[in-house]
Image (cartoon, rainbow, N blue to C red; front, side, top):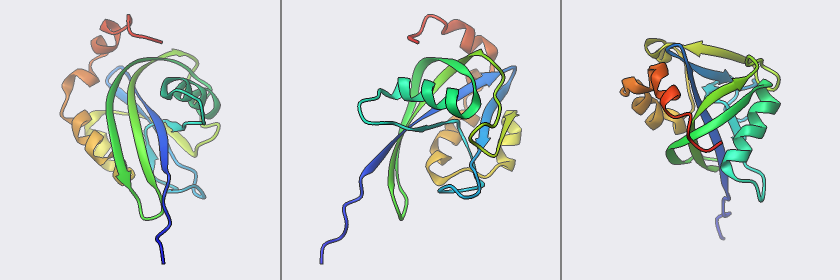
Length: 150
């Protein structure tokens, strides 16, 4: 008997920093990995670029407009029920305050506070990188990168 081939789910996620805080969102209880915290974003649709996916997802889920500045990391992770490929982009908030339109909650957290939030396994490697990179937590990193692609 053959094992079922699992498709890879492509996901785009945003790293949005402001005033020494990082924006995170909480997954709805009934969703895959429900109740965990994550970086805002979502699944890429067929024919959609990761950057356009991210802009669409953040508009739908949080009611915000962003500029994508640069790709920070690509992470592949195998869950028991699916495989995911996540692309994490450093972004700048352009318009509106994040509201939980399609997620359970939003939070702006400081670096030491991240340890108090439970994230999916796929985010663990990136969390270590974020915690260990002071430049992410400085507003000057966002200001210097305004010339990046939108």
